[in-house]
Image (cartoon, rainbow, N blue to C red; front, side, top):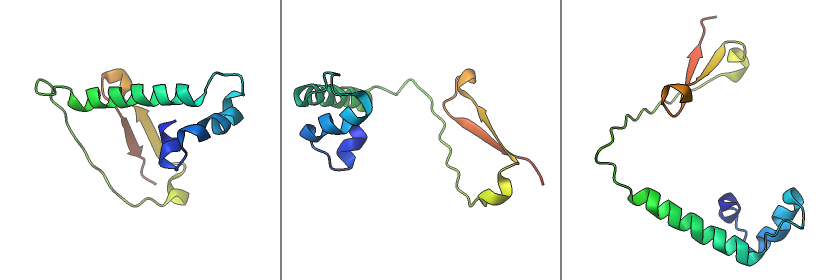
Length: 95
């Protein structure tokens, strides 16, 4: 739902917008949306303020140009969540 705010929907617009997906009897009134937004804001602030001094993080930025039509049969994506990492590894096999 936060994505709807980014597209310019106000609190009152959520009920008809979400009614298309969730039905009209789901209890998502404007006050409920406001309460959820306040809760998410508090969670985001707590997340942003958490102490990271005892945690080591590794950051990796990768950029490139991919010709999708040439790689569709040579790309393999491996999920790394099982090993404690957050992310995926992408492997390209030689042609």
